[in-house]
Image (cartoon, rainbow, N blue to C red; front, side, top):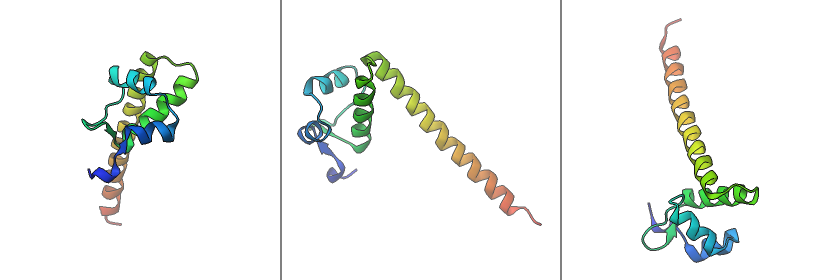
Length: 97
């Protein structure tokens, strides 16, 4: 991953209008992880954005962790389903007639 795709902690706090204490809490619970330089990947930024939305709805830190794990599981299952569907389509396309 190139460095240009990373967002700094300062920029993240500004863009998402998030309190640093909230971000520290997410990091302490290992819900999100930045790189050693304090930068975040686009995927981590999206996780933080989701956390903010859920937190605003009253979901606590433990609930955020559970919700993100479920979302990760759903995303993985969708990828697997697309792979299987692609394989099935290929098999059908390869059949004569």
